[in-house]
Image 1: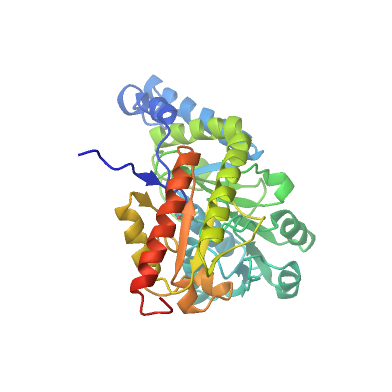
Image 2 (image 1 turned 120 degrees about the vertical axis):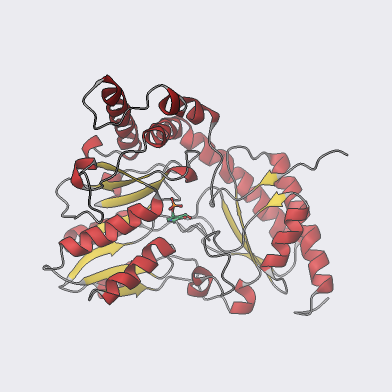
Length: 389
Ligand code: PLP
């Protein structure tokens, strides 16, 4: 029997490791296995590889190598940024501003900080998922110490006006952090232009390994470590370095720098092709998120009279891997907090489908996906008790 072609359209959940990245990493498992803290040649080899990767990542986001701190991924970077800045600056103030559509790696940290006496304001967003600058300005208080707004949303792909937010934060002398897990390596990003003081990055979203990430921290920012130990990473993040992971992340950064713009243009064309197909062929369907200020690879559709999980299983049976809500929250049956925040009623947000394209996807893939979605939605609606047949 001919095996079915599987099409992966869930690159916001994770990406496959690029073969070039694997190749760069392999010697650091086998030959160059030293501990970067050791003084002998084995240690020096590891240390040099780490510093080389630091330069590559710094260059991708226009930072200085000394402003790059390696962590275990996006979740840890978000934890370190928020707790580290909040704890260190609590004498100055206890107020933090974030948005209502952040990833749980921010929202859950805010809950913990709230229990510790910090006050958190969650900014609403427009129906397209944008934070409004006027709302931000009126939320700022004398005791505001930190603003944390994600660069692009992992569910609906909306890209926030970070440059404008950065200007406001600087004017008011407030630290500005951004979770850029979904944008680094996908769209050009310059920490100085954006005006961020801290920025979270994750390796596995950009064809690098899982379990490695970066927190950019601008020189001079007052931040304290959240885990204690041997004082690695200039004392900010103790723990023996994941050398193969760091080398892999360095290689992904290098590749992203060379290919990002061209790839973003290619994906935007595929994305728009698939969007037009779905919206023109399927009645009572719409696009969640911003029509133009969105990630080149993200589509988030809403379908009336459809239950997202059923649609996902139908698509999976047809070889299409997609997502409803974010992978991290898809085990919960509650409506996505992001879709709720953009004003979708629960019965509409349950019928959402996220498709996120990546390097391996072709025009053929998106055509097959479009046909599979149309077929599945028609079949599910015929069986649906939710609305008209
Ligand atoms: N922030 C955003 C916006 C994400 O999409 C994710 C992953 O889903 C994370 C943080 C967490 O990153 P990691 O999986 O590296 O911990």
